[in-house]
Amino acid sequence: MTDQSPNPQAFEARLRQIGAERYHDRHPFHHRLHGGQCSMDEVQAWVINRWYYQSRIPMKDAAFMSRCTDPQLRRIWRSRIEDHDGGEAEGGGIRRWLKLAEGVGLDPDYVASGRGVMPATRFAVDAYVRFVRDEPLIAAMASSLTELFAPAIHGQRIEGLLAHYPFANPETTAYFRHRLTEAPKDVAFTLRWVLDHATSRADQEAAAAALTFKTEVLWAQLDALWHGYVEGSIPPGAWRPGEGQLR
Amino acid sequence: MTDQSPNPQAFEARLRQIGAERYHDRHPFHHRLHGGQCSMDEVQAWVINRWYYQSRIPMKDAAFMSRCTDPQLRRIWRSRIEDHDGGEAEGGGIRRWLKLAEGVGLDPDYVASGRGVMPATRFAVDAYVRFVRDEPLIAAMASSLTELFAPAIHGQRIEGLLAHYPFANPETTAYFRHRLTEAPKDVAFTLRWVLDHATSRADQEAAAAALTFKTEVLWAQLDALWHGYVEGSIPPGAWRPGEGQLR
Image 1 (cartoon, rainbow over the protein chains, first blue to last red):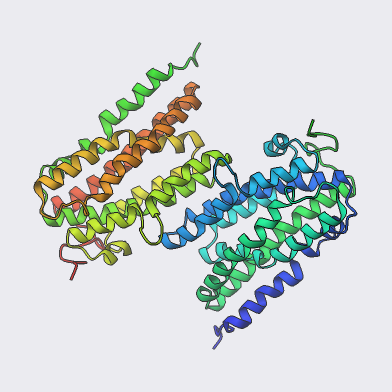
Image 2: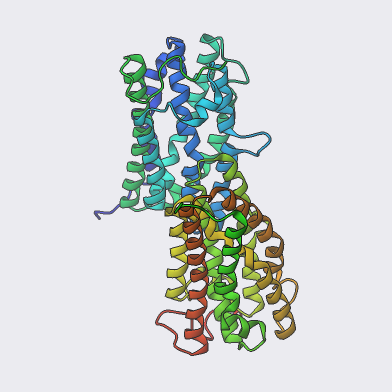
């Protein structure tokens, strides 16, 4: 049989291996950030650019729902948008991110305007939204499986930020604390769904490729950040240190 | 000045005029339905095909949210999806539609499978989802303004169904009763938004064209229904009387 699929355990192990090899916790920028070696300019650049990713996540999840014909799957997915947008009074993950922005000395309105975001960040993030909108459902689902690897990085980040940076406190790190419980809830369902539905070799290849693609989306953002703000080659139009400061 | 825009009152009147001339409450099928002249086969055909429209509405609303960069606008729009999908236990508008399906003697699982839906219905409805996904935001918003005209038709429908058809009761007409309060809440916000944002001549033209397009989406569904089930020219693959009955 040429189309014999590996069993779900082997397939899950393959997905986890993609994370072990390619998730952005391996990127030098994160070691620098969590190890306390980032300058405040570098921290601000990270917060500004990562805001763009956060801001597009509910749009990505809505794009998923827009092609999802099963009301029950839509119901489950709705909570992701609720987590990020929240209600008008309390806000959600995006507002918590803007608390971090304030905490690191940035004007949250400047950050939320998206003006200083690097083009390379936008290209990577927009590619993710388009992927989820246009690719087969199983690939769209699988692309969110980087959440399998997220709690570890959020844990390291909370610890590293609190240990090394004066701005870090429960309020400014609230985004990451929320993700410690939100991401595992979401990913447990999605992993189960992908393992149950990707039973052919072709679907498993598509799911693995989607997860790989997503690790690239995350990695490319940190490469751009490193080139721009650690090496100091800021592209035209992107945020320059000193701009958008909290008054 | 060639780009002088009419004032918001004149623009609103223009939008309402589109409804007065083109909304599907003017279609002969609705007069036939509300007047009690539809055979049960015709009622069943309507329920089966209109289910497809209902089933795509949350996908259309998610498509809207997928391109909406303003968290507050997404928050407001979320309630539309909640109205249609509801929670797992109680369901929403789609489940209420399936209650109507049962009430008219159809197997709700057959209806929810979408198997009997006419191709012309799918084409019209899918065109609407694509429109909201791809057209400029103001056109996407304006296309939902047919809700301005919906309460009248839902009122007539509840009254007409209860007066003429033994299947009509509070449970089977629950979908329409809910829409009597849901649609005005949604449309009040959307109309305000469109009037406030479509201030250039070009945007007003785009909004009027979008609303016109949406009336065409609704009208085309009833034309197809009439041709197929009143005139009796059922296209290959579409539901045939007697199929999908409740046992």
